[in-house]
Every structure is written in C-alpha cells, then in structure tokens.
Image (cartoon, rainbow, N blue to C red; front, side, top):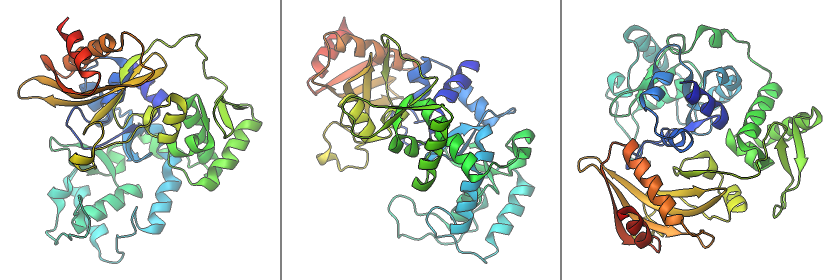
Length: 369
C-alpha cells in the first residue's frame, strides 16, 4: 500500500475508463510502474477507510489523492454555476433535493437504484442518460455527492461526501483560486519532471488564464526552473526536484490512458511517437488496432501492440505488433518478456500472436523461445 501511495503521488491522477478489453484503465498505470501488484490494493485505497484516493473530474474522470478535494472546490463551484459539464441539467425540478434525500437514507447507490423511470433521450451517441443519471453526475461534480466506489457492472456508487472522505479532508480550508492553481501546476510539474505550459495545463485540464500566473509565481520562488529542450519551440519548465538519471532502465507496456501518452503533442515531441486511440475509429480505418499499448524500453517508445484478454480461454491475445523505426535489437525479446509478465498479472496462462504487423513474427518466435 505504501508503494501504491508513492506511485499515486508521482502520477497525481489515474484516469478511469470503462473499456475492459484488457484491464480497466486505472489499474494499468500502476502495473506499468509497480509490476504485478494485487488489484485489491486499489479497491482498498479507494473504497475502504481510511480512503487514500477518490474519483473526481481531475483530468477527466480520474482517481486522485483525497487531499486534492479542497483544491478542487473552485472547480466544483464552476460546475455549479454552469449546471454541470455540458449545461444540460435543468434547475427547479426538485430532483436534486429528492435524490440527495434518497441517498442520505439509502446509503451508497447507483443511478439504476435511484432511477425514477424518466424517459431517456436518444440525442447523444454512446451515453443516453436518464434525468436521474444527469442530476447525480451534476451533484457529484459540485461536491454534494462523492463516488463511494463501483459495483461489479462498473456503475458508480454515489454517497454523501461525509461518508466517503476523511473528516480532516472535508474540514480543510478552501485555498484561494490562485493558491489552488499553483498547487495543481506544482503537482503537474512534479509528475512531468519537465514540460511546457501546455503540458502543465493539460494534466489537470486547467483554464488557460490560471496557468500563466501560477507558473510565473512558481518560477519566482525557484520551484520551477525555465529551461530549453532540444527540438522544442516553446519554453519549458523543469521542477527543481526532478532527477536527471544518467541512464533510464525501464520496460513497460503503457495503457492508452497512461499519463505518459495523454498529451499527444508532448508524446510526439519527446519520443517521436505519433499516437492516437483508435477505439472509436471504424474497424476498416484503424491503422494499428483497437486497444493499442505503446511499449516503453529504456527512455524510448519502441513499439506498439494491440492486446485483448480472453478471460474465458485464459489467453492474452496479441492482435498486432509494430516496431518503431528506432526500435533497437532485442525489442522483440523484451516485449515478449513484458507480455508474459502482463499475462501472469491478469491470471492468463498463454500468449498468442496474430500475424499482423512487422514485429508479430519476431515476438511470436521470442515467446516460443
């Protein structure tokens, strides 16, 4: 648990996503950094007392350390003013009050538990929410409800903040808007090590007008150091505590929702690696596959693989494997070793490789060896 807490402090946030073709998004960054850990640790940290992390709209839907709750109160006020993320929650219906009363009486509940049977619209592809679900999402965004956990169907369980968060967190003072912005930029800089203003802004999806003054203040205090990075046109900032190792010893498969590849422009500048999530692309238009994971080796992204966990057959399926032009000798062997490690962590007993991609054959041979 201490290792998980240190890892969360380093990454800052763990994006949550419902796609479960391999493993849900918030579990994967911990595996990439910690190795084969017990997933029950994450559930303990987020669903049992003392809670160490809580879901909020911190990057997008994401786990964050509980001590960020007071820092997010200005964001909560912003969503209260605009009636949610998409301005579609109508005021004056009485549904907010009735749902809060129902949760207060029932305890942690899903939208399905509380749904009043109001009709769903068909206006939006992919998420035709009931009015109950919309209002619950709004109440969570403004901090009147918190996420207590999720059920086996991955549905959110909503509860009162006082039954989810530690009392000390709820009692903590609300920082000023300026101090909250400084804290978010500071944490983004710690997670990045080095980054441009756009990188620091994107990490917590901050308003542009807050980021510049926060960076200037942290530079003045010496916490951020202005630097130039070879090949970058924009000014960059190095956190004063960032380590500069002589050599990077790393080998990891990265989820499509890993912080290393969130900001696509940054990923391309750092690694010369153009990456797009193709989940929402029609199958005949996909370039590399459906659920494609970049492969980090040393300090470079050297390959990408489309993976699927066949849980019933207990097989990790490699649907495609592609090498980058800069991939060093031995990439296939290193990737094969990491695929076996991932399969073992997922409780799978076999790794199979389909023939798609220039790295598929070498990886298949490496696995046989």
